[in-house]
Image 1 (cartoon, rainbow, N blue to C red):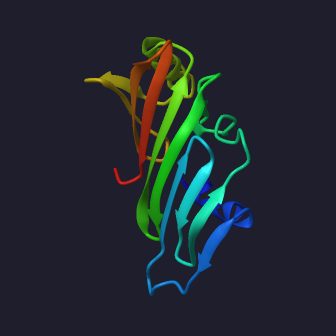
Image 2 (tube, rainbow, N blue to C red):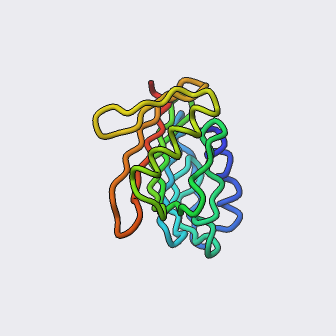
Length: 157
């Protein structure tokens, strides 16, 4: 999670439209939302605004949960980050993959197992816990000849 929050200064360097502000006393909330086109809205203690990331950055995103990378050929289609100083973070990712939901599910189960991370199917989701104790829940649905998926990574657990 800290890796994602650490990206904040880099995003601000590329900012197209931003409003600098005085941080509210004790309000260290960080919120970011991105879409597949690379549009990122951010709300930080010291600035609020929107940026447009370079073309392709979402499809080439370096996604990683304890060494488990995004499935080859998959594209991040969005994310939403909500974190703050002293407040556990929560990130929602959306993605598409060029394989069936069963193949994507199997890919992630195998990858987590190879990294020594327990992940199991529960109801309609793949669930597990990272090495630092954050929980994750992954859901996969058919989309055309591939899969659309969601990943919730939550440090509040």
